[in-house]
Image 1 (cartoon, rainbow, N blue to C red):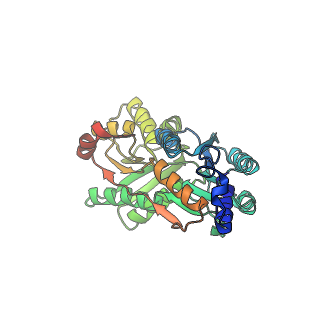
Image 2 (tube, rainbow, N blue to C red; image 1 turned 90 degrees about the horizontal axis):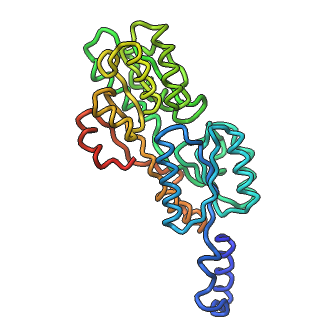
Image 3 (cartoon, rainbow, N blue to C red; image 1 turned 135 degrees about the vertical axis):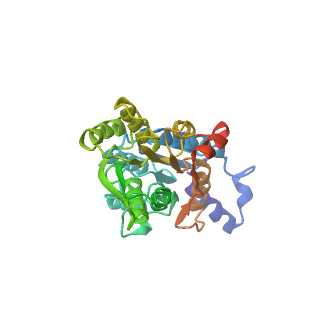
Length: 320
């Protein structure tokens, strides 16, 4: 494996007998870096784009990828990580289903000498030596961007009633986007009158929104933790005879193509971007940590926000 090859090259170089390894030294084909990657699942358009980015980037970088789909279950990720450890991969990367419950398995990886990279989602652990770096978004800031836009838009309103479609219970994006939004609207005329998990899925968003519409007749705004739940909410709103984007405003996070199309059509009012194209950066970080290079503990990707006019402008060239 790549780590062993690096150590062997160093040892040979110190002994001054590198030429004895033969023409060109170890074969690149024989010593390909191997990454074990555990993905949350395929619950949304964002996740599909993220998976595609990782697979394509691994192939382009010449990295052997052992990919596992956790189907949104932590127990599946724990099994996958332990399998990667048993297979002696060079590096493990994963996007945690939830924030807690990782210390034991990551300690096992650490003891096996396998570095770990967190992607997209962070973990809640007192021991940050269990992973090398985190690559992803600032979810709290995403929530703040959504809240600030809404507060500015309705600064003169007497009151604004919001229902919140939360992501998977216990997941970092759900917890952080909720926190950031609450921070941004604190002290304003905006009130969250109901909040429930739609599990980041379109069907979940539709189901929860149907329940909200039955129990509340004063909904002004939907704040959805991702586009897919927001699109599900649109279906429920239209089925109730109301017009999404007009009778009930909608704010979402992600900016995948389906969400951007709805924004350009006026069915969504504002989207906060969460960039799924992390593959190239992940492969670069993987090579660095396996080689023992220092990397930042947190690498945050650049992201923006979109109004209807902005969505119309960028949609034709949108990659996800």
